[in-house]
Picture 1 (cartoon, rainbow, N blue to C red):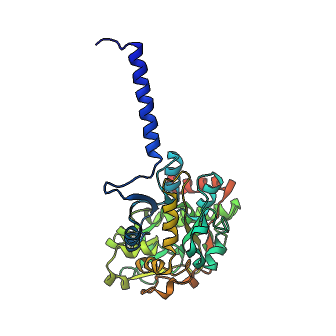
Picture 2: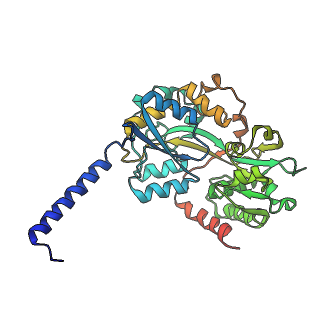
Length: 357
């Protein structure tokens, strides 16, 4: 094969440069489906998006919604951090991660002047959103807590507290979520400490409780399969979210499950809708966030997952179902906060629990 001339090389370089510029330009424009409709890319937790609301939004605004799912804040954060511009238009981080992402410049400022439905955000949600009280970068989506599900046919006379995981009668039939803040927060609350403690001695006691008393009785820590395995009967006691647990079971089986939030309290979460930096469909993202909080639409979220109306003041008027737990049961629960420089201390405690036998 003959070598290319200098003129040919220059031509090749110019074509390559133009192609690169064209690709870059296209990547920054609004993407469309094969049917010509604009696409809205959403990255949300599993078991957390009501299909009915998505479909009605698509019809009303002539858009195709593309949904991807994550199982933990860490997974979501790592993906966005690694990709720079992830391609997502809306993400759903928990409050502590909203705080982190705001500080790191990962979020677009939200134009709340274009959202008339934000008047329905509850005082509770506003009070708990201390990381972004004026909704400059986030809009509350849901406020709740994880709890414990028990198969009552298999488990009798049990302690309705986090310490159920210390009960050796149920060894190898129990699971806890693979979530550092949730598990350590449960232990801290059981011991009477704040789920956001920065006291090394308190955290050490919580670590030892999980590591020495709870972990030996668990099948494993499981962030994704806890609900399916509980529904199949593999697990008799499962730490997790009510919506995930009951989603995997037929409604006729629900009466055989005792789902409860331990009275000693625990970590509360507030998940928010945010627009990542560089989102290609910013205006459509604003429309979607506002659409979610229209009371009739938010009621569909409550009905789909049997949530209490912790975030929207008017949605209860339109709901048709009974929630799996009440707002009153959250009274002793504490919102997870950004741990700042103490995060490393928690990571070390969690690594000891997860990876050291």
